[in-house]
Length: 467
Ligand code: UD1
Ligand code: CA
Image (cartoon, rainbow, N blue to C red; front, side, top):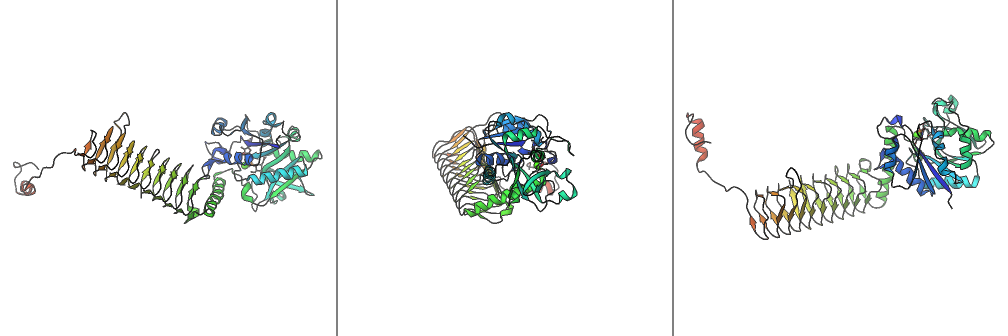
């Protein structure tokens, strides 16, 4: 069975990125660029995907260990031709191979399918995916004669008149497997970079009387290669525009689409409105009719319907329907809010569940807590969850009322319907419907202000009551 194997070259130095991270692991819209190339090859129907790794091989392998791809090592980076040779053993059983570069994440599966069909219909030794660029600088130029490709000339090796050619080599090819590996044996490294160029097989094929064809596509964005940070930003902009436009087509309003960061794979329901500057990342899902204000960061979270998130952070959290968050709240990993919860300004929640309709409206820290439904947490309440060695849990049952500025020292349980007086520091459990007061009793000293005034302003230096 099967039609073709894909080989993705991803071993290069990535020198122009000036980075400690291997180039193909640099992220675009939430995923490493190589992720998109692998997905695309799979989407186009590749039977098998082989990734050639070199620079940062271990890191790259680790990032894709669950992706059902094979890795081969190119121990030294001697060029794209040399890189492909490393994959020969893995793919020689397939009649055709498609070669892709790991630094072109915008290519579409449909395009690869069309390329493959073209190759099958025309049966050349090689088909090169090409495109016309207004500014072809840096790309290999396609040199044609009578409709066939006779050579691909790299920028650094091109003559003046060759540099004027606008049709470029995308770096994606279809080959008849056996023919490309035998041609590669004749590739030499006599060029400006001292590398074994894969592109040189084109001239070798021509010398052997084999035909090489170009399959030219219209959309230059798809074959935008990434060699440096400027090209990385451009690729991100192209992908971001597409992600946001697809969401808008599905009924999401973006007030200013260019200003938002939305990762690939984020899902947002219809009639949700996203204000400028929102950052929505990872595996986030947002329901319908939500309002997300600017400066909100939502990462790897599940948000229900009719939720308001006002300039707040929500990370690895689950938020029920009708919840209101912020402005300026910080929901950290493990936060689970039931429906109609209210989390107000300057409230931090971590690893806690909060029951339906509970309100935590101002200035609180809630850590490692299990809070029931209908609870009111007053302003400035602190869940004291850490004793310097361990974290402890606090349970607050349904309909309890915690007065302002209380400290709940965990482990602690406040049972159903209990009241905690404002300013209490609790170390003992509170039974249901009881009132707990844990604070110093108030004492009023009549006339104290006048007495003090005499001490400091009446000529005396000592004596009298201490202030
Ligand atoms: C390459 C093409 C050029 C094309 C351009 C498209 C060659 C010689 N040139 O140039 O015609 O227009 O891509 O973007 O092929 N790699 C290895 N091992 C190596 C060298 C490179 O695996 O020894 C991998 C890199 O990781 C990268 C890909 O091959 O994913 C392309 O290498 P790169 O150095 O970026 O080639 P370009 O100069 O962009
Ligand atoms: Ca490149």
